[in-house]
Amino acid sequence: MNSKLLFCALFFASIGLCAQDKKWSVEANYPIIDEDGLNGVIDLGVKYRFVNLGIIQLGAGLNGSFFADRQHFYFDDNLEFDNKWKRLLLQPTVFGELNLPGISRLKPSVGVGYSVLLDEYDRKIVDSGYNESDSWGAFNANLGLSYDLTNRFFVKIQYDYLNHRQKWLAEADYENNVYRYETRGKSLNVFKAGIGFRF
Image (cartoon, rainbow, N blue to C red; front, top):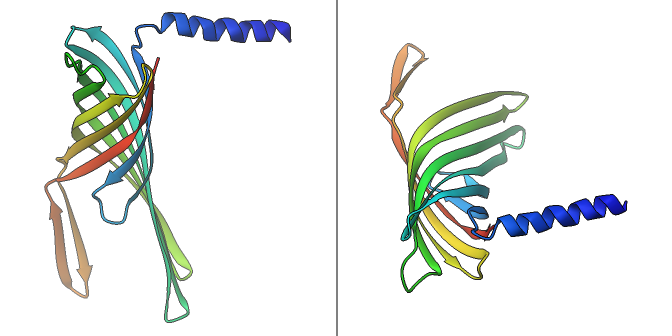
């Protein structure tokens, strides 16, 4: 038992000694997306700053956001509709974080990357239903602003622009009337606000 306590104490002491330059940070945010019906649940991220050029630090990060929606209602007292929609957004990015002279607590940042979106639909109508999943990618650019509350804790806001360029075409035939649906891409906007910890 004493050896386990000693190991834990040495482990946390070594983290504290090796983390004086605070190259790593973790964050928890509340995400908002401009997709109708999807509600933000949580966004978690980790960042590593690998180059310090004085006024700017360069790094890489990974964020994961989770969104969900559910529509459950009855129609004419005997028809039940239950629709569930879940989305996982994975965002690997490279970023630059500015160290402004005289305003060291305020840190603007800009980043670019390629995001992956994983959608899952679960639809039930009366006694029948189906499950469908889809994934797609999008170019991602973001602007952020963090403010250091202490030398370790900070608050931040961030705006992400996702541009989806995939083209798809669908046709539906309803009683010999053929309808064509086509999209050439779309953009999504994600806003995040949260807290973080540097180590």
